[in-house]
Amino acid sequence: MSKKKPWRYSESRPIRPFKVSEHALVKTAFRTRKDMEFLSDDPWRTIVEPEEIKHESFAPCFAISIDIDMLSSDTGLDIKDLVLGVTLRDPALLRSTLLNSWGVEDSPEIYSISHAVLGKVSGNRGIELELHISPAESLTPKFRTASLPGQIVSSRVFKVDTPLNGAGFPVQPVDAEYFEELGLPKETVWVIKWMSSDFDRPAEEILCVLINKDEAEKILRLSGGDSVGRVLWSEIAVEAFLEVCLAVFSSDPQAPETNDSLLAKVFARLKKETGLSFDELILKAKSDDKFRFFRAHLQKNTELGNRIRHIRLAGRAQ
Image (cartoon, rainbow, N blue to C red; front, top):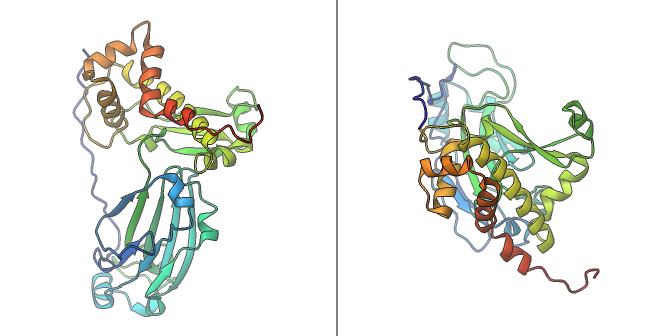
């Protein structure tokens, strides 16, 4: 159905210019609620509803454990020259925040994330918390040895994901004037910015949903605790995913090469919802009823109807 793509090769293993310690933080444990046990699973990942991230019972906490001897031996650095930091990433808002840092020797055994911090995140695409170790200040350069602040010599990421019932794409708030530069009205609420047509790459390398800053903060927070907000966000997700589906399947793609590519994720979702094969979805994307077909199945996938039925009208303007 489509032309075979030329052979290509890519290197996925990270190659660092300085020595690192892969396991110095492996015993560090994490939990998301006070009534849970600390777990040191590696990789560490859990799935919660966006609403739970905003709830007072959600209390991310680390039980920090650093293998000092391993860290020093692996990196060739003196422990007194290293600092441990905690970074919070909000994938929905494309925002990273350094929450705290200490000298490695002075690191706390227990560190909790406050509700004041969590109140500033969207939560619609989960959060990522990372412990990372790097030089505290510039050091005398040595061969294959980190010498600058920010050069991470050891790290661990703890992921709190949300169910895949939203758009699932990177979101970036932009000024209204940016839409005018694209030849669009400044009152535009959101559009998809396409950066590549190589759909075998991860979504964040291919596209980004641009949201007008005038509406972004409210839109990205709405679905966490308001029934009408959840409907609005689901509708945005449906329309964004609809554009992606039509762009992907109308391009005569080959079957996905990797499981983490945009093409693979789009196909997996649609195959589950429609029961159609890869080639059948390509034909649908070129048919006269493509908009109706894909929109209807995506509305089912995001449970849009169910969210509408759960809107409480009491107290709302009639």
